[in-house]
Image: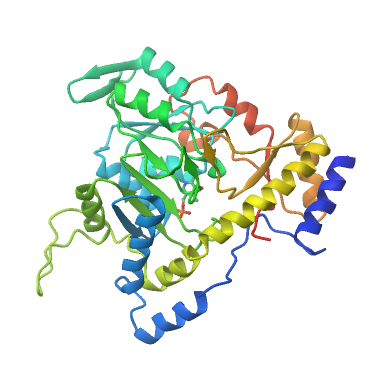
Length: 380
Ligand SMILES: *Cc1c(COP(=O)(O)O)cnc(C)c1O
């Protein structure tokens, strides 16, 4: 209890306030207003405009990828990435149960079914070991890919998620996926700016999706991006997300069922102003994480830090309590004292629409589900 009360005081000191402290709020300290006004004055507020192009170029640079496609939100980005890699109705997709619901929803939108595999305790993301063990038991490698011996269905993709910006064990995961001919996509919605062995997350999968929702490290109100090193896939992604229209001087010709998943130029203007500050945000959050680490260590509470060989963006920071009882006490005390904290998500197979999905034992996911709590992580 003493430790929790000290934590409340410490967090209030960080944000120099006695008022309510939210989990994560946007920080608009750059060219946001300038770019927005410029966009309104130009009248190009909607789905084409210079900021959309600039945003895509900035995302290519930041993620060190060849092609970025601006989209309306991160969920749509994952959905289209799945389609681009060839996930079809009736396919299955390997992912983690410890994730935000959008990961599983995006799979379901593609009329595919998620298979929930366990996470690693250190990264809180999809475990290469769990994937390998699952495929040893159920994998059936054929000419056109990997099938599930239990259901007879094709496993169309593997979709790990970098929880709170902590990168998964990418190298090991890629190895397993390659061996079983399963394309890897990254749900990088939470990990803009995170690195794995010196390279940005999002640059490892065949495709990756980012989110710019209001609570993410960089926001444009709502928005997303698909990135890839495969130019052909990238161009197809742009085409599909802009109604699959064949260029023509005046005719409307669409040769596939596309989507209106465009990011409006107004949002892209905000995104550009925010991306200009990404490095500043990353440094600021890293310093806060360091201060949290020292504080929580001396108060006997485990603060989660990046794993060796990775750089986390420290988007949402978290502590790991001893057990569910301690967790509940921490949640109750902090939230009653104007410090917003939240438990990690309920595992996907607890939700009615995903309760019948195939899954493994989930030992680590259930351990973390009972113990992880997010704490205020906004830029100070
Ligand atoms: C935020 C988030 C998404 C979805 O992004 P939106 O832009 O809100 O659609 C997807 N996956 C994860 C893990 C997220 O945290």
